[in-house]
Length: 126
Image (cartoon, rainbow, N blue to C red; front, side, top):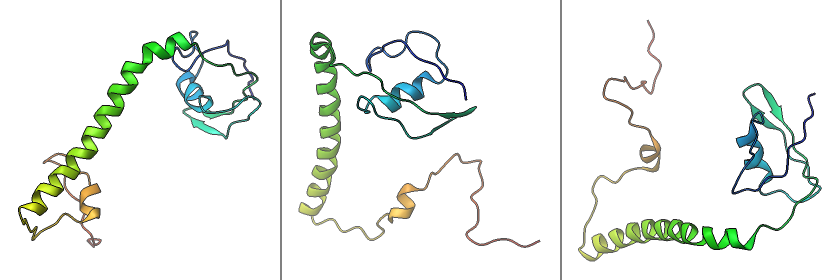
């Protein structure tokens, strides 16, 4: 097992050097506490295991910079949820009746491109 130690980094700035699988590392340890050992994280060339030796509070000035971005993200999410509820309300208020509702399994199905053939629901024997 290869063991390496990273330099101190922040969730906002990430790792500055070219650490292998740094995206996986930052994403995993971001929510870990000091002294915590991560689960195994599969990577392209093996697995990753992380141990947080020290954790310090972030810079309050950085949070002030991030506040508008976080607020905009929360607003976009809220608008998306509220818009769908508003649509449903308007349709029910108008007395709309859907005679062919989309089933949950059809909603999740990827339509893909027009050139791709869909797999049949039953096996075709030669």
